[in-house]
Length: 462
Image (cartoon, rainbow, N blue to C red):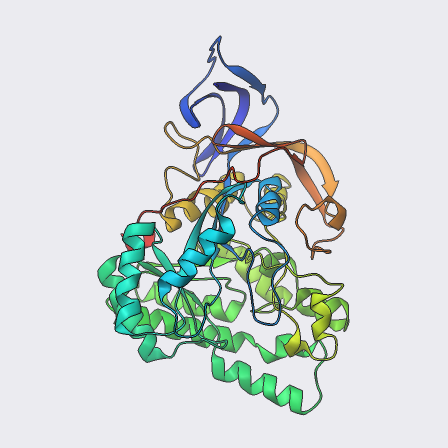
């Protein structure tokens, strides 16, 4: 079935212009003005902005964190993604059993996602230990599965030391594989967490103090130097949260380091650590890294405006406040870490652009659609409006105003960190490969409609 999207304002990372789109067999066949096709279903987009489907390259669906499992699986979580204008995700795998092969979690995640996801999806592999076998498996998985990025953690139970990281980075450089990292200094974090627990300082307000910006900045600095030492291995810093961490990114750029990218998330742009002042409400915002200060928000916005960062992802990792988050009611270290966000990202960022705050609409497309697709090795199939690209589209009414509430969200979490936030611009329709999956804010797609994405080489590895 052909579709003809007429008279919309097409949004790309290079500009906004009025044009028509002819869609056939799930891809964009033609872009122009005055297009006509007697066999096509016409979608009137007059007065609407037409964006490429957003690409979220940092989600955690069906994640088991040991003390809890996130409340969104690949079905409910991708419904939330779709309703928020995101048509492709790249999900970070959980750790598997001790000493397991890299293949173990690849197989497990196919079981979780295949036949359930309603948007297109891929995976990041994950390292939890290093030996010759897993280093060899990384290249095998990239070739056979199209998983061309793997994540390492510098803290948590399977945090890796510098020697292990060097082995991974050196091999990744040879294989042209992107290594993403959660950058926090393990020693700093665990020192403060242990100290606060021993002293009985276990309320939510101690969470951000236990994971200070210095812990992030030191680890970002070290990770980037390790990558440089490994021959400028391609690397990606996830969820940058602080001005101090940003300073280390700028330092690396000044010394001329290439082949690295950095993401931030809406929570580090819109929210501050005053959320932790309330012992109960503060549990909602327990995430790692934690929320920071207003100065950090402003520094990250400025970095986006200046083109110093590469993507805005979500780190969607939702738990229930009524039950799961209450595990931390008496001790913040026992609270599962993470928050929902996959549905809120595009509305929040688009609203800022429409209101003339911080970013332009082309910049929103760059950070939420096109550049994430390039970093993930999905471009130009995803993340852009051009002939031959998948017809993943989001139609937004730029004049319609609404307010974010938990009731309007489509995931399984029983709260949103953005409750009461006023938004300018409402998503009217979302298309996945030409199929309408969201209509007037309601999900109208089909379970399992999402396709697995075998990804090519990351733009950061080229």
